[in-house]
Length: 307
Image 1 (cartoon, one colour):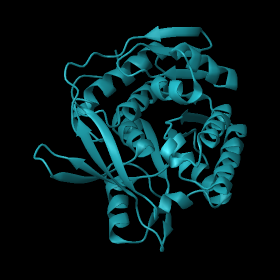
Image 2: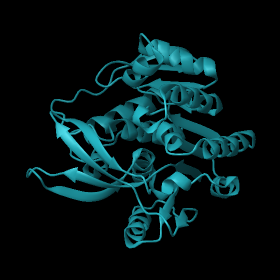
Image 3: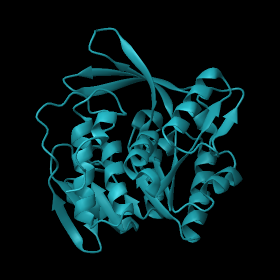
C-alpha cells in the first residue's frame, strides 16, 4: 500500500455562506486540502498521513478529530502547549477569492524544528508532498532542516512532490522566496506550479518556460497549471499540452490547484498514463470550483474522475 505524507499547515477556515456576513467554520490549508482529496479518491488503496504541529487547546483537538474522521493519519503530528492553530477568512468576488490571515501563533511554524521528527514522520513513506507555503511559514533554520530531511528521504528512495504555491506576503523578500522555491524544486521528482504566479515572480513568458525551468532544475515531471488556459507538461516524453475542463459558472476557486494536484496524484499513484492522470486532476478541479469552500464532498462523488 502506497503511503503519502503531506507536510504543511492546517488552519481554521472561515468560509462565506450565501447569506452576507455569515461564515462556516472548517479546517483547510493547501497541503491539507490535497491530503483530504487524496484520502477520498484513494480510499483503502493508499494511506494518507499529515505532518504538522498543532496546539493542545480544544480547537487543535477538534482539528485532529476531524482529520481522523476523514481517514487522514495524525500519529506523527506534533503538539505545542504554547501555540494554537492559524485562522483565515475567505472573501469572494465574482468567484475569485482573497484571504485575511491570523497565523502569528500558529504551531505549524514549528513543524521543522527537529530533523528527527520529520524523519520519523517520513519513515516507510513512499511519497512526501509539500508546498511553497510549507517553506514560507518556517524560519530559515527550520527550512534548512526540512530540506535536509527531504534530501535524506529522497536518497533512501522516497519520491518528492512539490507545489511551489508562491505567496510573497509570507516571505521576507521575493529573492528569498524564489531561491527557496528553486532549491526545493531541485529535490523534487514532480513539480506542480501555476503559471500565473510563476510569470509574476520568475518572469516566465509562457507555461512552456515554466515547465522547462523546473525540468532543468531536475524535476522528472512538471505539470504547469494555467487557470482556464491550456496546461503544459514536461516529462521524459518531452513537452505536451492538455486542455482543462470547461466550467460554466465558477463559484469559488479556493482549492482549485490543491484539488487538481490530488486528482493528478491519485491517478499517478494508481499507475494511470500521464494524460489520464492530468485529465482526472482537471476534472476534479472543475467540480470543486462550482462549490463554496476548500473541501467539497460533492466533488468526489458521482461519475469517475478518470477519463
